[in-house]
Amino acid sequence: MRWVPVKSEYQGLGLRRALIAEGVKRMVEIEGDCMMYIPTQIWSIRAIQLYIWAGFEFETVESNPCGYNNQTNEALPHIQHLVLCYL
Image 1 (spheres, rainbow, N blue to C red):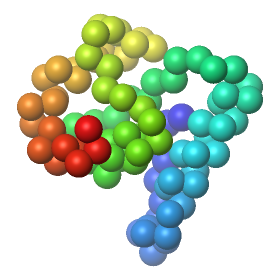
Image 2 (cartoon, helix red, strand yellow):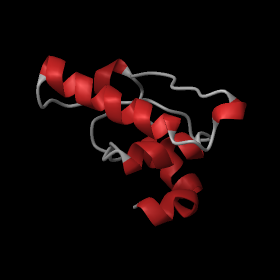
Image 3 (cartoon, rainbow, N blue to C red):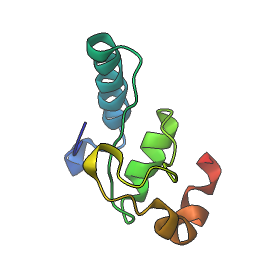
Image 4 (cartoon, rainbow, N blue to C red):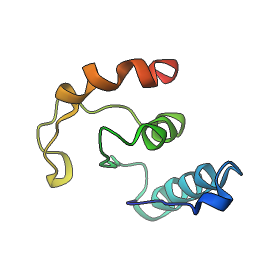
């Protein structure tokens, strides 16, 4: 999954949650129970909160998950207070 935008006039209706839930469901149907990785940016707090709601966790050990440069350890001190209610 990558870039799940919702137009501003439709935000707040639960569409992002529905899209993420359906995407995860389909991934499990296609690939089985496997590792999923969703890269995001430090400033995408709402996206991070959504991914945590969907059951995703921060990856802090693997240095290059799915070919992406993992900067989680550097980002956590900056965003932890913003996502604390989800941790």
